[in-house]
Length: 119
Length: 328
Image (cartoon, rainbow over all chains, first blue to last red; front, side, top):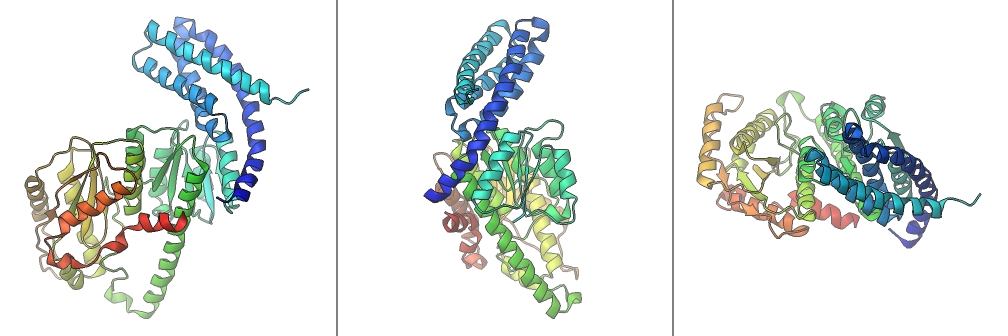
């Protein structure tokens, strides 16, 4: 791809990044609720599955749009949740998944804040 | 080129739309579910290339790929799976379902561009071939069922589980090598005297023979995990899972027994008799990129080298190398 085509593409992706950040914000809100649901044994498995669905989506797009660290943390959280669900969510496993999720949410929140236009 | 992109993530659809526009492809239709995609493909004008996400709710991309392959107009349309699922099991399922290529997310935009250019080249080549076939059919007696393909052509094999197009097999091997999924082997199977058979057979006879041999090969390879493709010149090539350690003679014997049971013959009743040659397997370990494609060549050479009829150069079958070189 030529330099001018790359520049053209990066310009086009600017609006996609803005949309990604807006959706990231919405997803973080949903993850807050699901994070609380992780604390309850009766809702833990469904919360893990829902969290997995969200971070999977983020992992697939963040890196392409220049948010590599967010993407890496999302992917790590997804992998941890997969292990957790496979091993039937023993207490120690979901703790690790929750810790990874917390790391991811912290970084993702910073990204969302940094890219939100000032009011 | 008309492109259909299917993904339940609207961000991915936005990215793909912009990337494809930068590459000059502005005729892009998007769908956010397999159900919506099936509605879109039902429209009169067919799509030339389809990009599918694997993980979607309800019907996933692999199921959608199978459904598309069952539609006559999409039997050979390039289908690129674009997904974050990089496990070998997903790659295997995708190619077995008929995917032409597989790109993992987050994707490299250059790589997407290269893959779409390869798909575009395939589409152009097939359009040119269709035009040529139409011309040939107009000037020949259609009742004699003259062959419109050469001995080296990789004629498609339909309705045999585990058999995929040759370019898909090449892409599959490249995916394995990229993912460092070592341990698989490539093994080839050759029909000796194929040139003589080709000359004596009608188009229908030859197509049936290739399909029957494909069935025999796949039956003999089970229960191993594998993908097989017909590479032209009477040669099939298979990529088999790690741990596959066949005795060549045993495999050869099994295939011959199966073919004997089929009682292969020409349309006029004359028997077609041969013993399939199985080449020494070539392991894919420690090979990457073009080294993996070289493994395909070596496997085919191993199967063909003893057949005097196989002196024909098989360079034309190596599509991926030339396509990738031409598209950068």
